[in-house]
Image 1 (cartoon, rainbow, N blue to C red):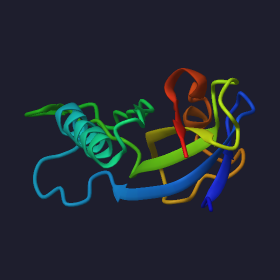
Image 2 (cartoon, rainbow, N blue to C red; image 1 turned 120 degrees about the vertical axis):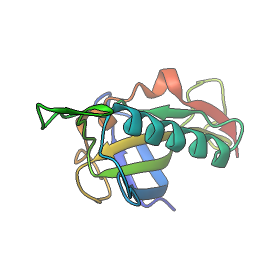
Image 3 (cartoon, rainbow, N blue to C red; image 1 turned 180 degrees about the horizontal axis):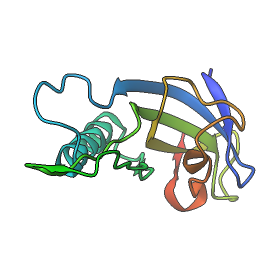
Length: 144
């Protein structure tokens, strides 16, 4: 049973089977949000998602928007802010290969994206960049 169904701009429906939220800057005790910190956070999310996913399930990062609210640079460069919530979702859909039996095969992809608040994307109500994921290029079929 899926948590929700998301519709891509291509029209393909995806079922969200697992969703993990985390605060983008939760636990940050020192420093400030900057490119170095953000890149480390993103690499950590990707690495953790790859380790958690089945070997046959690919992981895709939706490049997050980066804002530069301060014109002054600190010791690590300018302030660079990502959206407040990091999301890792396991999505499934119908098989990509038309030769695969639709009863026995599904396609899957783990997607990492950022959004401003902790809400579950549903239908067409999701970050635009998430809805534009090129599923046919990135997902992989698997047998049930």
